[in-house]
Structure formats: structure tokens, C-alpha cells
Image (cartoon, rainbow, N blue to C red; front, side):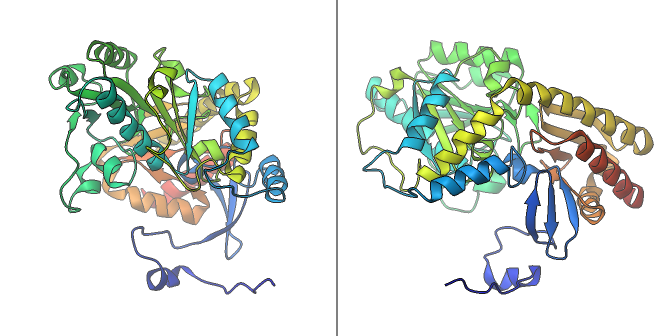
Length: 404
């Protein structure tokens, strides 16, 4: 029996859902490619990508086909079994990365939680019980569990929840001396985003990442790359670490991996796998057949020369259009990021207008995000068309014309 849907509106939100978020005034109900439509049929060009999630746009036909096919076979098995899609996906991730082993979960926070737990477990098993200190960076973001939000370097997300986990220290991003000042023999891991996402789309420098690798080797600490937002093609390579010529000990991915279907993964090496025994960590839904089937298809599409090389071309066109806009409005001081994770750093005089700019953009039919208090973030589909880029930028121009 199929129940008739009851039309709900944005006004229903505060009466039904805890207000951890403050959603926009319109509700998207349909998506196709880089475009979405709301309840009233209004069309929008989506430069947000569901916060870097819909890597192949909305409702990609191949992902739809794969999901439909798998849904008729088996949905869930529990972790007392494995399944074919999980094994195939794990093999593809291993063959295309530094890693030898994979652990599947459901979100970036869960993948990072597993990474942080594993780094401490490995250090205490291989060295001593006091080797449990994790070094992270100010303005970083690693998820919303209590452990991951404490490792993240933004107190606004971690304060007022009671005592925080001990053994977490923060250094300044891209300043290696601040790491040297706090690392010691009790450090079990250093974790960083290769591009700080929520912190303002700030890339790590190559020299900084290479020095971190040297420090980790010196102090027998693990190097963890949080690629939840940068992994699976977002930067123009399958993994962002490939730009840096430095291999981590643990890597986490999510967002783009499932193209919109919830899935994440933690990748690691044979060395670290050596301490693992069944039962020290787990997940109910992680690695389920539906998610893994969709993720496998997502990687098959993205990990190709045409898609990965096309990202650079799309970035070039976006920058070209943004520079035209900036000549008219002098809106921003810098475009930063990598591939199709783009941060537009807004001029100080316009910072207070960022929310007005986003709202005006919605009204014109184009969707952007923010990152920090002075950056407009773009994370569109990796296969967004040139015509959608041009049309989206035209709508952005119109929004700015009415706002500034």
C-alpha cells in the first residue's frame, strides 16, 4: 500500500524537527544533473553539490540504474556477513590508492571516529599506553561526534557539551613550527584536511605536508588525511594527497564517494591492520550492499581520464566567469581551493552581506554555500556542463546587481 504524501512546507520545520539547522525558505523536491526544482516548480542551478556530496549531479542515470538493480537483490546483511558490492568497492579503492585495507562506515564523522580510535589503539599496542596524543589544527573540521568535534579546531562546535576528551592538541595550519613545538613521543597521530573546508577552503602547502610526514616518521606517529570533502575526484585527482606526493598512514573519505548515497570509508595499511582483532570497532550499516553498489559505480565514472581532466577545464571556466563578475563588483580578493572545491574570499566591506548575497542568489535561481564568515564556497558536480556554469554565473551576476 502506498500512502498519499501530505504536502509539508518550510513553516512545518520548527514544529517537527529539532532546529540544529536553519534551512532555506524553499524545499527542493526534484533534481537532475546540476539543476534542482522546488515545491513550486522553480528551477535552480546547484553550485553547492549538497556540500561536495553530489559528485555526479542529481539522479545520475547510471547510479539510479545500479541502485534499482541492487535494491532488488539484497539491502542489508549485518556485519556477521560480507557482501559482493563491498568486496568489489574495497578492491577498487585499494588498487587506486596507497592502502591495503578498507573499513566502511556511513558518514565522514564515523570514518574519522574510526581513524582516531585506530590511531590510539595502534600506538598503545605497539608502543605504550601514554602514546595517545592527537595533534590537529585550528579551524579544522572532522565531524560531529563528540570525539571528532573535539579533534576539530573550532570551539563553536565543541563547547558546552561537558568535559572534552583528553590528549588533543591544536597547532596552526600551514605553520610547521607550531607542530614542532608540541609533538613528542606521546603523540600517536597528526590529522589534517589537505584543504580546510569549513575553515574557509584553505589548501595545505606542499612543504607543510612533507614536513608533517617527516615529523610523524621521527616520532612514530601516524599521519591521517581527512579527505571527506576532497576525496574521489573533487580536486582533479581521485585523492587530493596525489597532488602532494606524500602518502598517509590512514585516509578517510565520504561525501563524493556515494554521489549522494550515505557511505564513508577509512583506508589504511598492512602495518596498522596488524593490531586489529574482531570486535574492537564496528558499525551496523557500514558497507551495506546498497551503498557500496552505488559507490562502486560512482568511482567507475569519476576515475577516468575524461572526468578527472575535465575538472581542470571546468575550474578554468568558473574562474573566467568569476573574474568578469569581479571587474564589475569588486566582490572578492582571492579565489582559492583546488579543482572544484572553490572558495571566493569576500572583500571585508561585503562580509556582512554574505547571507544577503546567498539569499539573492536563491531568488535568482542559483545555489551557493559559505565556508567560515568571509568565503563563498562552490562544490558543484564534477561533470557540470559548461552551459550550466555560464547560466549559473549569469544568475549570480544578477543577484549581485540587486544586492551590492
